[in-house]
Image (tube, rainbow, N blue to C red; front, side, top):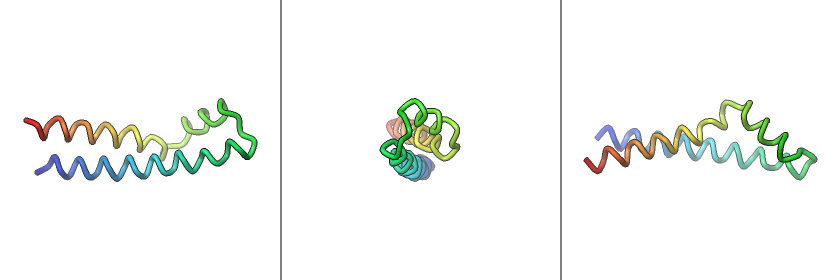
Length: 66
């Protein structure tokens, strides 16, 4: 049962992090270069939620199959 909790937490993190990252993509047409965009993404903590969420989803799926 804990796998479902981890899966849903990971899903929430992935959605939140992906939404914030896509929102920051709006800065590229405003004059930010792609290199500056990637540097900005690396400095924002909330953008790390997406990879953490994907990792939690993967862990939950792997343990669900056992």
